[in-house]
Image (tube, rainbow, N blue to C red; front, side, top):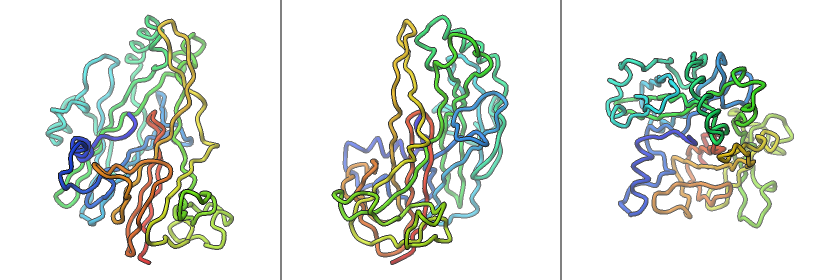
Length: 327
């Protein structure tokens, strides 16, 4: 699943065919879960194996400062069958409190970021592997999905999202014909966001509005800010935000399998999504879902927060977040 599903997002998509006066999807006015990332400790891997320690991180926007903010995590252990687990059941998700207390739902912890150990699912892997051996087309989808439930409560408001974390076999298929059919996915790495006056200007010549200052050379004369980004001011008014990913973090091609097991390689497609607490993306009307690696943005004169999320279409996610001071 490429992104967490929230009730707010579902409502926005349902309204995409008509103009109802709702705020655009990119405008964050209240508590919202914008993204959820899974990452194996010590690596960029988004997919996990048995025994791995995984850091789960939720990007939760709380522009009104609602308090106290409580973020809870839970999961339903996959069994390798086609049965719908409670954590993915739309009816069960209507009553989250009852769901969290239901049999088979396992609490994982609290906080915006937690670490968990991948649970024992050896029996489920056995069933998954047996199906792939019987149907070679399934070899390229040799993973289980661990549905992770994220519940954010703050000041009387609640947001819920579900992240599907891929669990993959390792030693269970080593030295078999299934080895290598599924390519392990890693999280992408956003490199920089710069602001240029128009798309005719090369991105590299733009103002570094979201460029991490890992070293002094990244910021040129702007210097490094206290928030870890280059301290260049964010120009007010209209311009183009251009985003770039780190090419060195790109995954190798992944495969899709034909019914006879033949493997066709494909490259990941990277998708960018933008959110702000103020300002406007004028080219995105209707539902107002701002996407793309180069987007026109009309920045406000006053302070605002901006988020840009990078997804690889296979469950990998990463993001930048910055509080921009007033001009």
